[in-house]
Image (cartoon, rainbow, N blue to C red; front, top):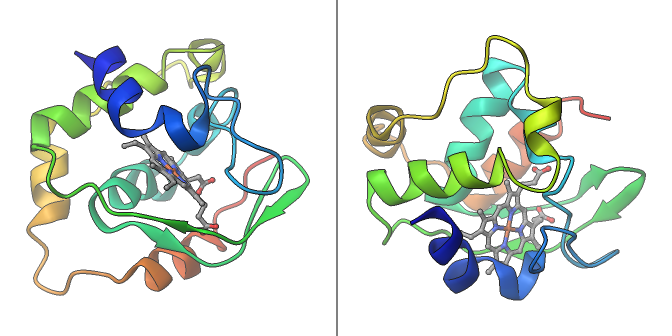
Length: 133
Ligand code: HEM
């Protein structure tokens, strides 16, 4: 149900085709897959869903400084299928590393069950250390 979950929860901000809105909402098209190239980026994708994100982030030469709400109300399975959907939509599939493996509900569950849950600001701080084009 990745496409429906995307339409219901994400498209309003990130656009029907993951194009985002310049200066307001970062694109996910040709971008989410760049994050999937490192372990830190992969963890970030999951953490953004669970904990939200706040603070300046530079994506494709544009700085965004908004607030992304957490989607912790979605189940581990829903978050995994949502992420696997965006990682394969809108050209993202062609940018995935050759050894990419789909995000599992178990990965989401262990990120959710950390003892000290990060704040949206902390997710933003961690993000600033991840370099993506
Ligand atoms: C950031 C995905 C819903 C607004 C992000 C990022 C991802 C993402 C992966 C991180 C980009 C990066 O670090 O390079 C999603 C998905 C959604 C969703 C899959 C649906 C569950 C929303 C909604 C809004 C929103 C509904 C608006 C209310 C933002 C903003 C940022 C962001 C403003 C940048 C935050 C900052 O400046 O620190 N989103 N998003 N997102 N998202 Fe979403």
